[in-house]
Every structure is written in C-alpha cells, then in structure tokens.
Length: 330
Image (cartoon, helix red, strand yellow):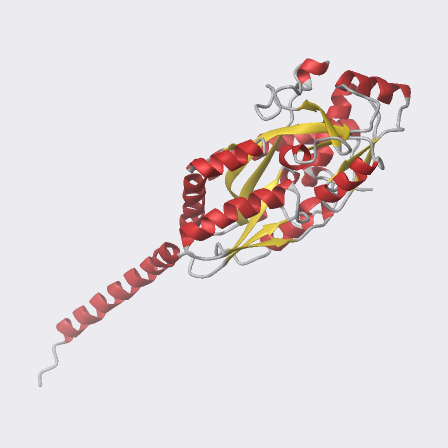
C-alpha cells in the first residue's frame, strides 16, 4: 500500500479543526443544558422575612420552568454577609445563586473587613422586585402619626429604639434614613432576621421599625402593629389610608426596598442571561404579579447591566448616609 503523506496530513489537520471546534462548542452546549441538576438559592437572612418570602415564591416558579428543584437555603448572619460570602466563593456554574436585598450595597460601607468584594466577586443578574417600605409602631403606642413620632423622639432624644434584620440590612438603613431626614436620635437594635424583630416590636421591647412592606403589613391590626406611613413617592394601593412619609412632614423622602438575583463572578454569560430571561417570564405571569402586589411590591426583571447600574447608584447614596450617621459595625 502506498503511503500518501499529503493526504494523511490533510486528515490530521481536518481532525484537529473538528476537535478544536468541538471544544469551542462544549461550553455553549453545557449552558444550553443548564440546569441539569437542582439549583441552590441562598437567602442571607432568617426564614419568614421578606427576602425569604420572595425567594421561595420566585424559586418555586423557576423550578417549574426549569424542570429542576430550586432549593432555598437560609444562611443568616452579619447583615447578609455570611450568605453572600458563601455564594461569592461557590463554583461559578449557575447552580448557586443569591437572593440579595439592599444590604448588598450597604455592607461595604459599614464593615471594615468585608470577606468578599461585592463588585468583583458577585455578578448581578436581575432585580426581581421592588417597593416601598412601611413605618410601623406597636398598636399600643401613644403616637398616631409620623409628626407625633418625631415630636416624641425630639422630646426624649435617644430613648426610642428601632429594630432591623441586622446591621447593614436594608431595614437598618431605612430606619437610619428616616432618622436622618427627621433629624432625630433613635437607637438601632439589630436582630437575626426581620421576623424576630417584629416579635419584640409587637411586645413593645422596641418602639418602631421601617420594615419591608410584605412582612410589616401582614402584622397590622389590633394588638399587633400600626402603620404610620409608607416610604414610597405615592400611597400604597394596598393601604390607601396610610400617608407617605413625604406628605407627613418630610417632603421628598423616599426609601425603596428591593430583592434581586446575583451569582458568583465568572458565571457564564449564557447562564446569567437565561436566568434573567426566565425570571422576567415568571414575573410577567398574572398570578406572580398578583402575589407581589399583595406584598406591596412591583416586578422588575431588568437586565444585568441595568441592575448593576442601579446598585452602583444606590451604593453611593448609602455611602453618604453612613458617613452622615457615623454608622459602623462596632
């Protein structure tokens, strides 16, 4: 048999091209098959709070869409840093996600030694939902309005306490934001979760909170909590008789809470895009909108670039407030 060197080299070259092309296609194919196993969704706060409620609602919807379980895992601690750090250090394969809240833009300004870099170690995917927060006091409290609360705080500086889901949580900074706008001195009492804080608020152990709308509004009623104001630009359709903080004596005041998905930095863009697109599909469903509406929230579903820009803008806002209020973890 005659050996044809040119023909052999041609076959080798062709095989090499096919092999290289195959390796180039493999990541894309892997992304197309994602998810091929359960997805872990980390909530960096305790069960029962608003972050947890939204995560389980959207996670259940995505489970159906993906044909794979979305397992919600609560990792509370350090104002959300514990769970966020775990996600930041997880494999960048799309199988570990973070349900973040505003704390992700707050903590870098108040923790001296962050265990991760928010902008370098985490990739924004989409803002899932946002909405106003709710200023609440115990139903037994003597104050009936924001003006009365501010007057009481000024008459007894430092005597009133407000609770939060932990140092650096968006509930914490919402309370500080209100105090700064009202020019009052109130003391912060951090808890390991928003739900726990409400228990002490109802009991009168603390005097007020600016909480996430869903969690706070569910506790309104005789013997529990009274709503003094919402923190949005307009009154809430769910609580039309409750005024805004702005119309209650603090013109221009606004404080928005939000919840969104992030992933470990380096997660393939194709996977990030799929999560964002599929989340937007879920948020467009009428029953999802209805369930979020009941909780005082509006679906968002923006792109990673839009979400990232919004986070940067909010981070600058909190940096100023943290400096003005001298907020630290000490």
